[in-house]
Length: 177
Image (cartoon, rainbow, N blue to C red; front, side, top):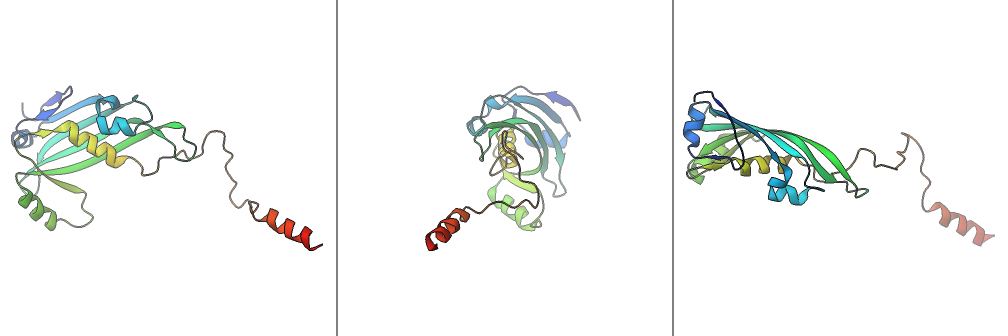
């Protein structure tokens, strides 16, 4: 169905990515975080859901291109206080599909260093769940943390913190007396 929208349950496999892109088809769906092995392992809990959309197009290189959008909420562990907190994930990727690694190398060499396009070689089909999970993982912070941890009192800007060495200084002054 040209330009058609398909609601896709897991697993989402594109058996003919060339045809999907040529016909400008679109798939979208929602997948629980628990449905992704690697993302689930990094999450503080298996709760949450990712919403995703994949649109097929033909890129400027003439190769099939997927426009992937992933959003949702993932529970992460704060690296400051070790408490779980909800993280709102939003990411978009543009993926050019090629048949060989050699083609991928040629296209990647022609792209600008800051070009957001990814180039992926595929055999016969493309597993959308792998692409969605990869994109979600890339969107996670390296060191997840709250803006302000619960129970913590943030320091006011310009507030002077007492040096931990002040006690030693006082001891030295007492000893000299």
